Length: 297
Length: 130
Length: 121
Image (cartoon, rainbow over all chains, first blue to last red; front, side, top):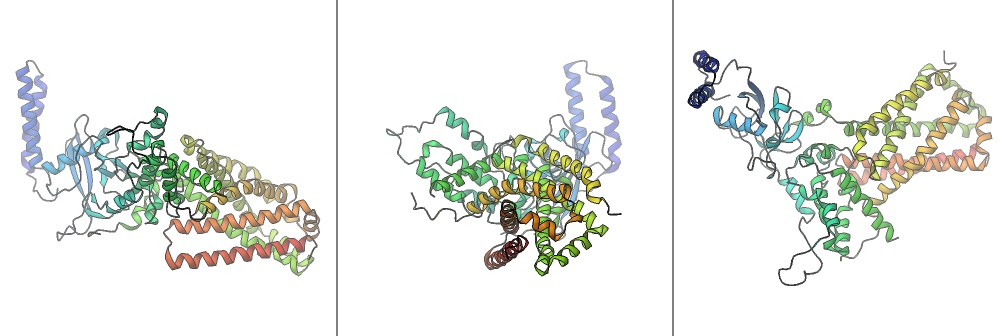
């Protein structure tokens, strides 16, 4: 709420109006429509002059703000936004509301709004979560929204994901079958059991929540991190790639900064918005790597 | 890297209130590990008095054991060792991929059991110390 | 595929040995505490009592093995903890050397001590 000057005096009037319309009850569809219109108008007015004393039905959003390019915003701070509570409202909805009504410079990533694109992983009330997947009603007030920890902040809630993507690419995150499939354009068939085996690992949306939660990834910059290891698991366990490819993939994992750095803190498993059992997958790769090495003795 | 702001310690141990069970288990395991390896060096150093003769050895050990501080610290050492053992067993199960769903409960269990064993051992450890 | 570089170059051996020694130490450390604090009280330890125990070959071998595994487990654990903090390059090599020397010194002194206590030396 840094940019706008609130017109506080006007606040009381629409409030009374709203109370009246509420008392009238909804008798006809027309009444209801008018009531809704009035409520909406009131909401817009309230938004234009951000309420100094918010009504009870507002959720307090404390948002991390930082802009390296604007004098006076270079020092990180928290801005307060009072966003009207709505049923089913997510943290992302609230952020969008705050941006559209209070401060257009508020910056954050989002796209699909349904936990598929993985662009709005945020640090909400002390935990990595997807903004679009987190219900305001599930959170304690005030809601603290910060950019992902252990990643460089570019602006406000936007972090630099380059390092995360580098680690993901390092494990060759693509299907590499040893043999061409049968005929032209023939599909690569997988058994049901094998599909079931890798099912959870395929759910990764590259949001970076796990990497951000990992204490080891924070200290050791070379550590591949949970997401990349899970990605390797997805292909190493895929039988269609063949034994030699699996060996190659395990060799990539079997490095000092590969699976061995995992300390089973379960932080990644706890925060994964797609419920991937990351620690379990990392542990299985460790055992596979040891087994492979024992065989060559 | 683009221009960025380093949020420093607040990202790590400044956040201790938000740590989960697995994180606490790791911190305690690491802490007890440092204590134990530190103690191992001290232990061998103290026992090395045996190389200078029988009386030197007996006198050193009984001299140390007569100090109340040493006795109390031994209880601390027991706590550290028992926790490291119990949580170590928990970690071995995690490494085998067993009971990953119960990893938080098994951590709490190892804390409780450590507490019980240590409390039950206090009389034996402090016997004759006063 | 790619020719295999020799087995266990990459952290898997130390990880594996850390677990093997752990399984051994769980038992022996518990035994050690039990024997020297509950069966025999630490405050009543004398040189005569120690040598009496150490003269039993099985006991002495267990204790020496206890020392060796504990040293490895501890020193390797410290090294892993430092790697987790992002120790790399020349510093890493220096720390590795230092820890190896400290570990070997400890193991050497401890083994010598065990032989003295057993009355061999």
